Image 1 (tube, rainbow, N blue to C red):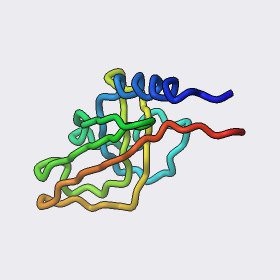
Image 2 (image 1 turned 90 degrees about the vertical axis):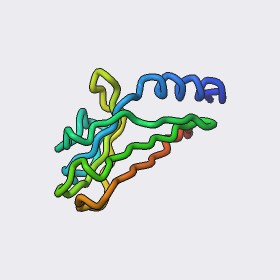
Image 3 (image 1 turned 60 degrees about the horizontal axis):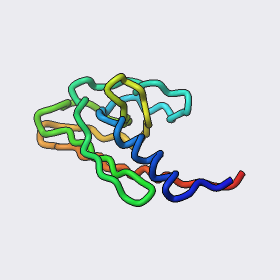
Image 4 (image 1 turned 180 degrees about the vertical axis):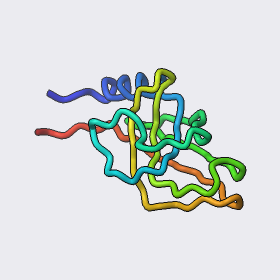
Length: 116
């Protein structure tokens, strides 16, 4: 079976319409399909996402401004909907945020298929 381009983009659109919030955290534990939340979310970083669609994908942008979440060692980023359903969690090298730093996270989700 192969999903059509229209089918893939319908899945993309449903996902896009449901995503709303992003947050940063301090837990560097490897991401897993079993994750249901960030390991150690910094609540102050929870913010509305900027989303845009492209063919078979979504670009996600999340910003933490200079005044927010300082003196933390950030290691994770997550995307949720309004009901706190976790869509994705990623871990990255430690970023030690200070009062002179803003932090922008940009991620692209690609909806592809592969044969198994």
